[in-house]
Image (cartoon, rainbow, N blue to C red; front, side):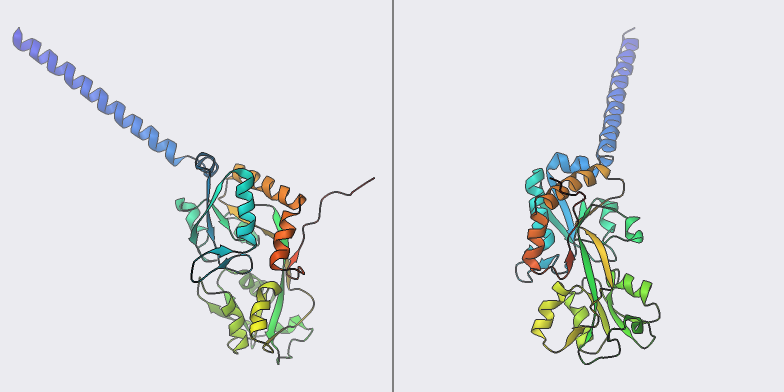
Length: 292
């Protein structure tokens, strides 16, 4: 009888232990599921931190080579966004044009904060906030090269070499409008000024660039480069931020912040700080008419 009681006690203890382990495992699984399914928006709202990846491309994004400090139109805009929403903006990772969306897959960062121009291919990989401006790209060549004077179509020639960085917007312009031309490709994370340097030194013939970004190089290298036509090659909407596909709540909140900044003049003030005459930017038109 005593032996039978010991057996029963052992069974009861084993059952309790097994139940406890099972309960622990189930809870663990539930916790893992909650963490893995947290949206980017929920994560940002919980932490009050927006982790931004960025691409160095003046004047949108300027990085001091000595201190690593970031300045430019986008950092200034994001600082204002952070103030409005009560978020800290954390500059998490420098990325290149070819791999800029990869961090969304691993949750390495919450947003791309670089003023990327939107196109159909990029729109498949991320949600773009509303435009903060319309960026203007011009064709720039060596000053003594007259093959393209007031004749952009002459660029579309197998003898012409276009300076690009893989995935940068000039790459898309070359493919879409001048497919017959050659391309001289720079590696990812190359300094954007190298695009201009390639043309100035004769390694390439043409580059597509914004005037505000090119002006410093042209001032430091007088009589080297010129704009070949008063007409821009492209005028494209330039959202400040891209968020992961499906993150509509995060996009909506950021849109509200940028809309507020467009209406109160903050965006124009930031753009004019880096480009006083707005040679590289068209302002977003207000969607209403003032009436008396």
